[in-house]
Structure formats: C-alpha cells, structure tokens
Amino acid sequence: MQKKMTQNNITSQQKKNGTDTAARKRELFETMPVGRALATMAIPTIISQLINLIYNMVDAFFIGRTGNSYMMAATTVTLTMVMMNVAFSNLFGVGGGSLVARLMGVQKTDEARRVSAYSVYGAIVLSVVYSALIGLFMNPVLRFLGASDATLGFARQYTLFVIVIGTLPGILSMVLAHLLRNAGYSAQASMGLSGGGILNILLDPLFMFVILPKGYEVAGAAIATLISNTAACIYLLLAYRKASETAPLSMRMTDARQMTRESRRSLFSVGVPSAILTGLFDVANICVNILASAHSDLVLAGMGIVMKVERIPNAVNVGICQGMLPIVAYNYSSGNRDRMHRIIGTARIAGLTVAGISIAALMTFAKPLPKLFLSTSAGDVEAALATVGYAAAFLRIRCLASPFQFLNYHSSFCMQGMGKGKETMLHAIVRELVFYIPLMFLLDRLFGEYGLASALPAGEACGAVFALLLLRHILKKSGKKQM
Image 1: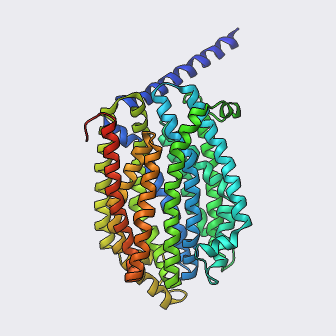
Image 2: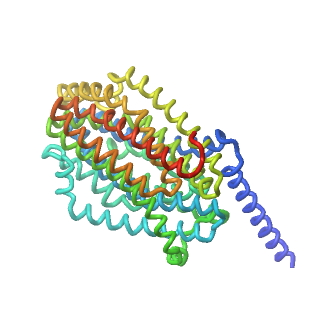
Image 3: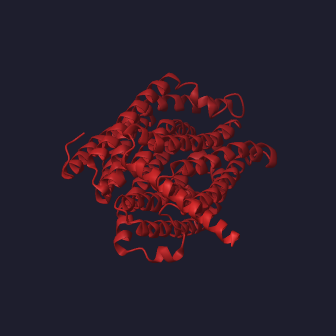
C-alpha cells in the first residue's frame, strides 16, 4: 500500500513538472517580451553555431599547421558535400520543425508528435541513401567538385569518414536539434551540437599528430569529426526522448505512419525549398571551386580559407534567424500577427548590427587572419605566402556581402516560419541562379579571380532586394501593416 502511494506521488509530481514545463513554453511563445524571447531562443543557438564553426575552423587550423596548401584545397572541395548534409537535414529539420511549431500554435499536439516522428525516420532513410551514393561514386564526384591529382587523395580521406561513414549521425543530429529547438528546447539542442564541437576540438590534434602518421592529417581531422558527430547524435537522441515526455515530440514508428497527408504536404512545402536553398548555395560553392581551381590550386586554397573566416558572422546571423523561426511560426499560426512582426523587426536589427561590426573587424584583420589557417613558416613557404595573399584580398572583398547575406537569411527564415514554401523556393532560385552564379561567371571572365570574389557581394545585394520585396508582399497579404 505504501509502495503504491509512493508511485502515485511520483506520477503526480511528474505530471505537475510536465504541466509547468508546458506553461513556460507557452509563455516563451505567447507573452514573454519580444527581446527576451528572441534572446532565449537565439543565444543558445548562436553559441552552438559558433562552437561548431570553431571546430570546423580548428580542422582547418591544424591542417594549416602542416603548411600544405593542397591539403587545404582538398578540405575546400569536400566542404560542398558537408553542406549537402546541411541541405538534407533542412528537408526534415526545418520542414518538420517549423510545422511542429505551427501545430503547437493551434494546439494540435498529437499531429505535431506524428510530424516529429516522421521527420526522424525520414532523415535516417535519406542519410543511408546519400552515404551509399557517395561511397559508390566518390572519385568522379570529387573530380567534378574540383579535386586535382594533387588534392584527390586528401579529399578521399575526408570524404570516407565524414560523408560515407558519418552522414547518418551528422544529419540525424541536426534534424533532432531543429525539432527540439522548434518545440522550445533551444538550450538542449544547442548543448548537443556544442558538446560535439568541443569534443572535436579536443580530438583533432590527437588523431592528426599523435595517433596517425604524417601525411594522414586530413584523415585524422575526419575521424575526429566522425566521433564528435556520433557523440552529439547520441546526446540529442537522449535529450529528445526526455523532452518527448512533456513536448509534442515522438520517435514511435506508429506515429510516423499515422501522419496525415495534409501534414506531409505542409512539411515538404517548406522542407524542400529550405533544402533547395542550401543545395543551391552548395551549387554556388561548386562553381566557386571550379572557377578558382581553374586559376590554380593556390587560388582555390585561398578562397577556401576565406569561406571559413566569413562563416563567423554568418554563424551568428543564422543563429539569430533559427531562434526567430519557431516564434514566428507559432504566432503566425495562432494569429498573433503583431507579436510576429515585432519578433521579425527585432531580429532584423540584431542581424544588421552584427553584419556591420563584422565588416569593420574583417577589413581590419584581413591580413593576419588567413595566417591562422596556413603556416607561412612550414612546408612550401612560397606557395603558402601566395595562398595567404590571395585570401587577404578575397576577404576584403567578400566581407562586404555580410549585411546582404543576413537579409537573405532573415527573409527566407521568415517565409519558412509562415509556411510559405513556394515563396522560399522562388527566393532561393532567384538569389542563386538568377543573380549570384551568373555574376560569378561574368565577373570571373572580366576580372579574373578578384572578379570571382566580387560576385558574392554583388549577387547577395541583388538577392536581398528581391527578398525584401517578396517578404513585404507576403506581410501585406497577411493583412497587417508593415514593420
């Protein structure tokens, strides 16, 4: 009898805790002051983005200690396939996550659980297919992406561990983080991704310089990434399971099978454009790699360094937008347009402020920053100096794109939050295929490698103007005055 009473007390306490957690999440989405709500969602995400960026940059930093420009060029080639992981994770992470937030806004928690379960299993299937395809066609894919005879071997090392073996934990961890974040568990999502990043930072030098022999530094970085992504995935699976006790999240196969056709259509209407947006960004990077490698492997290596440096402001701004998206989605579906507009406006001011600061900082430190990624006192010193020179020049040009890139991200995330899949896809196509990629080929032909670098600010500026006009039209149709 006493044991039964104790069990009942525990059950009652669990229910009370679940009710309290749900109430706090509703406060976050519905009544918490806008600035505080955005900070609550965005700050953990920004920290996670920065830590993961740091561990990616640490890979490049340690590889750069070898002074081998060809290893650096190889990691630039493989970045394209890593970004495809991000694109695939967006299909179910952004598509499913934003739908979960919208369903929460209209109190359809059972369907939100089904959507979350479908997203998890969809990500698993997609990961396995992508890994198998890359494994079967690795050499031709790497050649297409710009690998030369000097860089192919290094690129194969990275691809084997990070893509062929590591795609499943990589994609699944990102999808789980999206679902947790959109259910209001931003801190748990960020903890998992950040923890993986910190582990990778610790493992990099161990595998690169202690365990593996000289010449296998790229393989060492790849193995460290594989282990850290796997650890992050395990943590996020446990956090997801724990959150599912109080949040509309599920991993049950029966829930995934019971998702309605309407929800499936809504998921893909946002997820596919989001994946295409990242995929087209990846296509643009492929074009950059091909055009840069046509000049020389050193130009390609220099451009690769810049692509890593410029991700610092991008990581902060993507974190702001990812923190904003669930609140936009929830309030759009619940009909609280005023709160939605205030969240959008607050996020826009924050992102543009970050972009302005980043331009000043990158302009000031354009010369010393590339030397953090490539030693000019080891290996082929002459080649390293030339690579660093290219990187400094490219960085001064490409950093001007920062505010325009943020406006493109911001507008796209707003549209995704409102479930505007067609508009998101239109923006992605126009941004990359109408503006950036054609300008890339045109300016490269007219002005060489420096024209290639100039295509980013020119293309992003044109895309931002289009994005703002498109978002303005959507908000006007929603029946609320503009911000």
